[in-house]
Length: 277
Image 1 (cartoon, rainbow, N blue to C red):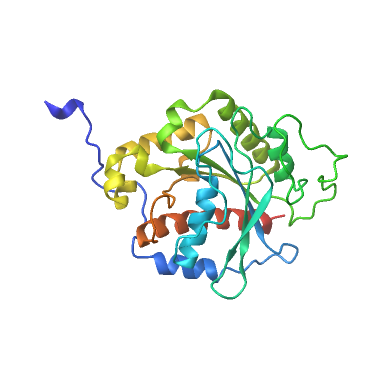
Image 2 (image 1 turned 30 degrees about the vertical axis):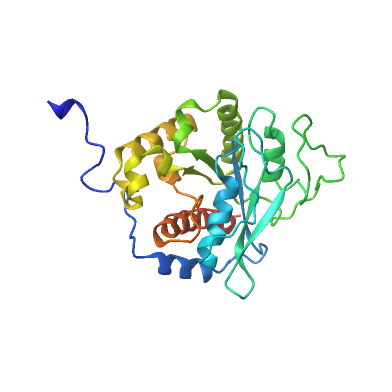
């Protein structure tokens, strides 16, 4: 009788992740060396709707490396307003000595009164100066003081990451989807790698909420990834389901592994891109 309902869990994981590799992945990222003389750091540009978890992801990455919960990037607490207004670069500390050779840029959310696609594309191409305050009604123009007319390779984005919340993907605003697709299409035209972070997996699937290790055996999460792949026209292999730190007061290995593993894929994609320039 129950055969009409597929089981909520697959018998074996549809993607492999070694849950004991937290230390190894962290060590590899900390030892990561850029092999391109004209690039001092890889720039990763995050974009997504308000509350998708862009700033949360940056904070979660930092928390994983610091082994304690840190909140440096401001997170939107109310659903409708973007906390990020200015263009900011976040460096991640490498223990006590210096910073890691990759940085994150967070932009204003893609909501209706949010960032304009032209501004995300300008940021991707390195034209937006640090600290620029986004104007949802007027794109940054070449005559503006915050416009960088001669961006170096360091100023440009080396990987575009769309951040999509798993729990609301089915009812995401069409205009937000359109903006995301316009930006990813532009990245595609230039050859910049485009990856997707599918956040809030614990809010999308009760199995995963109970046990994070079920992230790759959960039927629901795989269905959400397929939906994500169709809506944002990206292959499944480019989508990484993650859980950011949200209400935890301490870090834990399972969240860390998921976050660090996603960072490793993003960094490798960005590094491949700059290696062939």
